[in-house]
Length: 378
Image 1 (cartoon, one colour):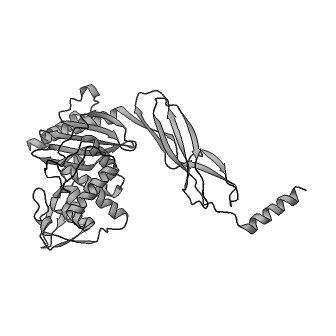
Image 2 (cartoon, rainbow, N blue to C red; image 1 turned 120 degrees about the vertical axis):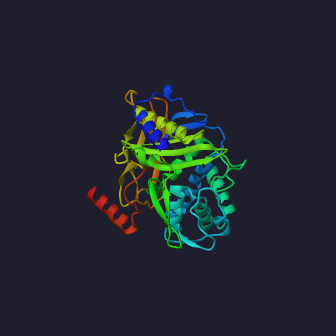
Image 3 (cartoon, rainbow, N blue to C red; image 1 turned 90 degrees about the horizontal axis):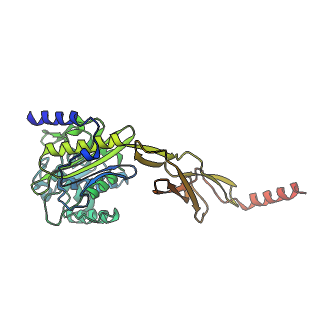
């Protein structure tokens, strides 16, 4: 009861506006970023290597969700529980060796209640073995350019060679959020895990802020004796999504307090502007010997700028470079790149695409066109 009261009190205390100088973060390491651009809004010891505890499961979930989104792993697929998975300690859903569970049921166990047995079972399903899965975790870390991260397991129990940083965790969180369906699970405060004996285990989200903080829908808590209390959180307000990470906290209360400080500071400090919409025509290019002599060029996605809420009006200019265009072109084919230089010194690069299918003109049609041109020119 005391902890619940403190949690509610802390929430209301930090709904008020907070300045960066007033944050007084107690975590060993912390960071706050805007999700769509990765812009760092606040940082403290962001590159210090620390034990990530169960925040490790963010990387595990990335690999699992990749397979689901690619269609290589189905939510209804059956997973046979191995002896290794069933013997896991720490947070678990108490599955037994030889039992079978659907992917989605195990995914709920991982995303909501941080079940170690469930994540090992899914790791084995995805890669064939826990060891192979860990190799894939580290390959993904290299691909994401995470210089201060190394994994030795998919669950996060302490190991000297198992470490990450607040910055690296924020990058992993951004990557996981590309798989939008994960929020269906991480945003749930409670659910049930159905056992084979027809009993059910009550799953309660280890991140209580999904119930208490408006807009929060994830992402992952962590705790071990060596790691302390950790939390990678994400929330969305007014079309702005923030990601915060705190590591090495002394208590759940401190972890909660610092997370709220960071998020409220971010939401009260920044704004997100669409500099150029993906629906705005950027240019028109001529394509010889095609079914469309001219076609319009657009941005592949909106160009977004995150800035201080009190900053001056943003000014920008851009340069366009087209690459060698090979026919035929499909809708959304990349035909070049735009480099946008903003008055604050930042540079944004985005791909340029077309929004229609372009094919080579057929010989007979070209011949008729040339004849008509010749006749009409006389």
